[in-house]
Length: 127
Image 1: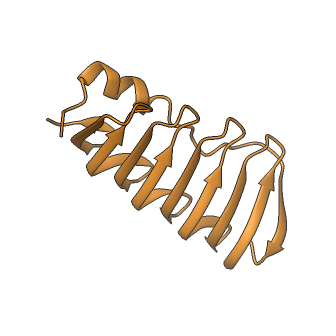
Image 2 (image 1 turned 180 degrees about the horizontal axis):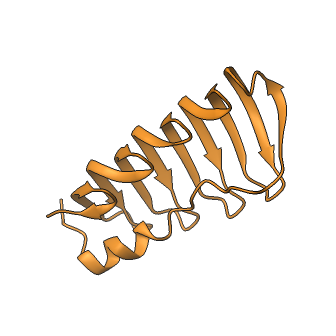
């Protein structure tokens, strides 16, 4: 596999949509406090998955209004564990996350199918 150029890696790191705060949310199905539920937001975001103390926790899926999507593990409301983030342009990162950032090993695939392997720490590539 090829290695992704550092500048391009930084570009995509800052494109990962963060979990939006301050928008109206609505639990439309299930237990959205401690269990498994579906939550929609006034900005068009939607979450389906595990919830603990009102925060995303365990397995879940977040779909963003621009068409990007994260499928994977959450801990205390942020990406944490194994996950796949697919950008609206079709590019995709598959790998490890910690405290909301890429952290550990992962593979980035561009829309044309080129694959780049990298290791990350706190969202930044370390190699």
